[in-house]
Image 1: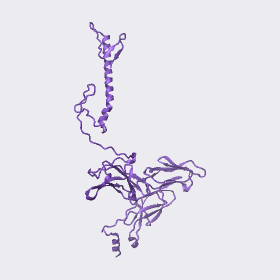
Image 2 (image 1 turned 90 degrees about the vertical axis):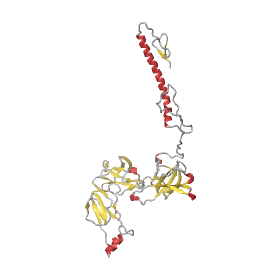
Image 3 (image 1 turned 30 degrees about the vertical axis):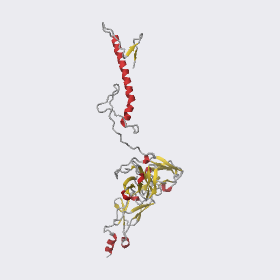
Image 4 (image 1 turned 90 degrees about the horizontal axis):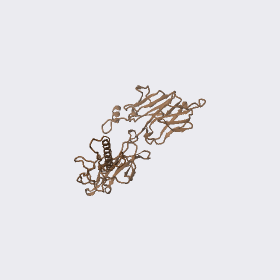
Length: 417
């Protein structure tokens, strides 16, 4: 009869067997590094159904892959290693790494994961609680805080940028003040509380009579599995102007009069205390009468560039203009089919091809002038060669169309351009 009762308690009304949740393993005091000879307490907490009232459920303890000879809910340990626990019928808990040190100085960090917006506390501890003087804390080799004597280093609201390797240094009086001593480096990782949000178009709103009534936007993000119960608030912006301030609703309806072509919106997700705030990339609405694309692409993140009230430029189609052939003999020759075309009207911005052609005009004029100078120099060389070696019975005539030799100074040639 008792066995039948137990089975009924474990099977919910849907007919599927209930899966027990993973137990939570905690450490007291909450530091992953201790001195040799010290002890800490491990506690295994998990969800237990009413079966616990009928028959005690034992707790299994593991050190690495070794099963420990204890079935209590909490145990005291002093051996370094990786600890896990398990209750009957439940998965194995997440591990806790315990380190034991024989140094004069150790840096103690929390065993549990630290998430964005939460305080990050570290303690530099001397051998068996001796006072540490001239205390420095380091983050990735750079000093971040100094204390005259023993004190904890606290980051009030941690960010993912606070992740890295930490270390501390200081002196102790044993019995006289020692030289500076350094602790071992400890890796600290700040977990992301939730992902950067993305703004999506999820549908349109129809007014009475089937008329268009607006566009529905949703600010989507995902919380860390360990923090899935954390409440978030959402705000919506049109360019730099807030259109709806923080609220628990992740959806916002753009009114029909505001739905215009290329209107840009973005959203922001934050915790209730605003300790963690993250922005979405830009989203351009399809505009009234345009086909709705639920997988529309987004623009760059507004957090990386200044915000502006100005609308983005609207592209306009330009009617084609027949090409004008280049009739200037001194200008550059273009291949067939590649002659430049007349530009668009003055109201439209120049195309990249026109900007490139405008930038090349000064270079072409300079090239023509250099070619004329080179032609004059070559004519001078030819004249000098003819004068040094005149042919018998022939008179050298100096061409005057391109260069002229001044009287009395036959060596000097002036080039007219």
